[in-house]
Length: 339
Image (cartoon, rainbow, N blue to C red; front, side, top):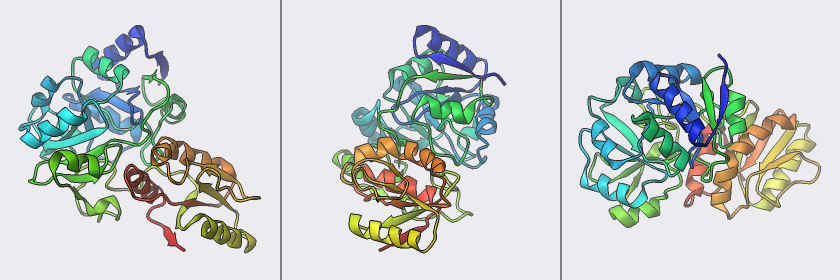
C-alpha cells in the first residue's frame, strides 16, 4: 500500500477526512502521541486499525470526539462525575471509561460493555474528527508493542505501507498517552496514568484509586479494560533493564557490569551520562514533563547504540512521572534492579 504524507492544513484535513469516511485508517497528530484514526461506528474500518498495527484483538481502543454532543452517541450513560471530569479536562489528555452504547462497533471495545472516550487538545485532530463527522477510534500509530510515536518520523518508520495516509502535525507536546480513568464505580480508578495526574483528578473527584496494573503485570487471563494494561508495550528491540538508584549508584553499578564484559549502554537523565559508555538521555531527573515528552523517542534511539542490553535509570512514580514509570515498566517487561 502506498502511504502519502499530508500537511495539517485545510487541504490535508479534508483529504484525511475523506479517506476516513471511506473506511481507511489515517495517522493523525494529537497532543499525546500520534493516533491511527478510523470511524468508531464502522467495525470493518476498526478492523483495519487492528490489522495495520498487528494489534491483539482483546486490546480495546480509545474513541476520540470533537464535541460533547458526540458523547451520547457512543456512551449509554454519562454520569455526573464523568461530566465534571470532562468539563475540567477536555479537550485534554484524559480518557473516561463509560458504559458503551450500541452505536459503537463491538471491536472498538474488544467485546467489553464499557467504552473509553476522550477529546484531544489538538486543533488538527479536532478538525479531522469534525470533517469526518464521526467519532474516531485512534490507538497509537505504531506497530503493536513498539514505542509510541511522538513525531511524524516515528509514524513514517512504523506505518509506511500499512496505511493510506499520515497527517504531519509536528511534535506531540505531552508525549505519553492519555490518563485512562474508569468512572463506572463510585470512586474513579486510574487504569493507565498519563498527563492528567492523580492529584489533578482528586481536585475534582475528591478521591481516586490507582489500579494495581499501573505498577504490576496484569494476569494474562484477566480482560484488559484499557489500552496499555496488558502485553509488552512501548519496547525497543534491544533488552531494557530498569535500575532504581541515585545518580552515583547507577553509574557505579553500570561501570561494574561493563568492566565484567557486558556490551551495555544506558538510558539516563540529562547531565548524568557515564563517561565511556554510550547513552541516550530522556530529560532531567526532576523534570517529569520533559521525561514524558522524551521517553518514547529515547526508547527508539537505544536500538542504535549497538548494545546487547540497555540499563535505564528509572523515573520516580510521582505526578506525570507515574506515566513515565508505567511506560518504562512495560518496555522492560517489568525487569527491574534495585540498588
